[in-house]
Image (cartoon, rainbow, N blue to C red; front, top):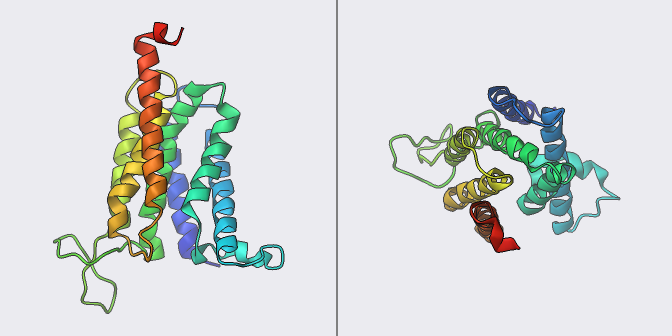
Length: 223
C-alpha cells in the first residue's frame, strides 16, 4: 500500500475538516462527505483521462485506475470534481459559497501533503528557503509548499468576507487558478502544464464575480 499517498489524502481531509469547523454556519448537510465525494470523482475522472491519453484501454486494464502516481489529468479532475460538488447545490448558492473555503483548504492540504510524498520540489533555486533532495547538491523551489500557502491564505480570506450569492465561489475559482498560474512555471514539466485551462478558469472566475456584483449593485440592469 502507498502510505505516503494515504497521508497526503489524510492531510487534505484534515484541512477541510478544520476549515469547516471554523465556519460551520449555513453549510449543507454532510459537507465533508460532499467534499470527499467530489475529490474521489475528480480523481477517477482525471485518472481515466490520463489513461486514455496514454493510449491504454481502461476496460482491459482496470488496475491502471489504482496507479494514481502514474498521472492524473488536472483539467478533467477539476471539472468533474467541481461539477460533482456544484450540481446538487445549484439552487443553493449560499451553501456552495460556504463550501468554497473548505474546498480551497482541502487543496492546500493536498499540496502540503507533498511532504509525505517527497514531491514538493520544482525548478532549481538559490533562495535561502530552497532545499534539495537527499543526495543532491541542487537546491530547488518547494513549489508545492508555495501553492499550499497561497491556497490556505485564500481559504482564510474567503471564509471571512461577505459577498452576494455565488461571488465567493467565483473568487475561489479565480484564486485557485491564479495560484496554479503563479506556481506552474516552477514545476518540472515537459509541456509547461495546463496553463490554458488555468487561464480560462481565472477568466471564468473573474467574470462570475463581476457579473454577480454588478447585478447586486444595480439589479435593474437585468430587467
